[in-house]
Image (cartoon, rainbow, N blue to C red; front, side, top):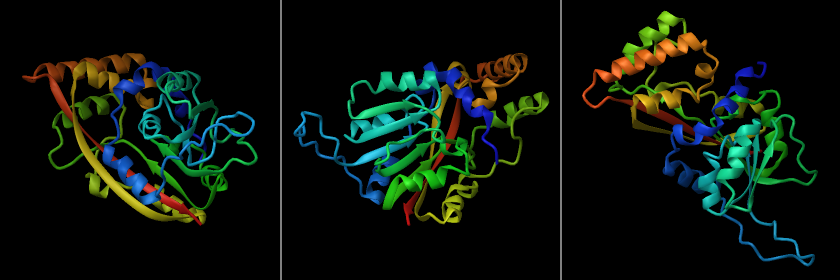
Length: 277
């Protein structure tokens, strides 16, 4: 499978991505730490050359964007090296993480990044980014940066359709269909939504799957908030401007007919953790 060129579209949404995209559930991070057993390293002060201590737990994030999943782990005290393909997104990440000297942001694709020869990490993780990395490279490279027993963790934030999903999405799907855009039906409920990561981890021959845990939650959006969210999605960024304008007009029209002018969008995230063999 070739690398999807749409992965470069996200840089166009660099200044809005952090606010428009949802935060991941706090329980996801708690469970990640519990399963992997990682804890922030305790700094021991400068070494004999006066350099700051760099020992302790070290995390590698693949595709950090503006720091959406980096900030919670930075606040927990972890040392993190974050890789980001987009220049503008990497700049945003450095801005959002400026208060955390143990976090460094490197502008590069994961495929092209050349780590130091002695680089080793306790956890490699990717949040809503792993599917954009070359499948011929990602598992082998992640494994090469982990000791045996180290962990790779992957999760996304996808549109979920529980039984009580908002009927707005049935209505707006008709607009997508008329425009020739969007995935269309059927929409599987979260519990049967396919998750390819666990199978890929197993098939790589480099990891064993030790956890797969789903999360589902709902958020309310005004028309402006929902359109700001859509403007961070690769398909909408790349959409023909006239089609996108018509779509957004229809979103505003449908929500204007509601008493509170809001919709509920459900999200699903599946935390998949593999242990290095």
